[in-house]
Length: 178
Image (tube, rainbow, N blue to C red; front, side, top):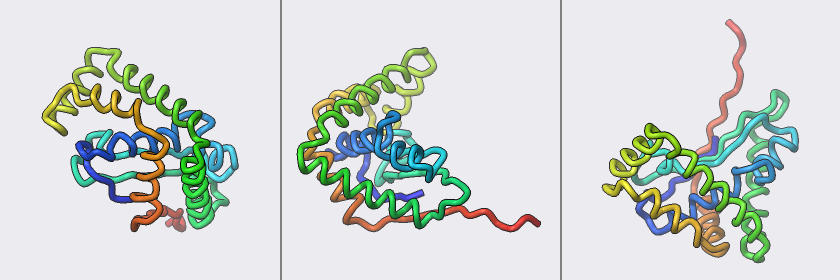
């Protein structure tokens, strides 16, 4: 687990951080999945902004988690994630991430609407947003803003909150059986 501090859900950077999470982790072609899982380093991986799960209000956390293969060290995975984040920044700066950003937008939108397909899902979402922001419809506003996030904005939050900021790394290692 790698965690960086991020601003709260109401901060102007929240939509770009949400899109960064989606670009890195949603779908089989997402960089985390393709480099770590398909690359044989992990069995699963993902990225998330804690505020979008409503477990924190502000300040929050941007997290990357991975379940590593038995023969892979945390240091190897950390080096891969660091390289992946730097590569992603270069793609965003170079204007080569438009397709990845569009894929992330589409998957984010599908996930949002799948989450409100049932009455219970809708009730949970409305209650979560009213608790976190005071606005039960904030999720819809956030989704609308995420649709307009640019490559420059995503690259900016990647650099500001992940690449140049302190982070916490937690590695759970198997111990000897007792």
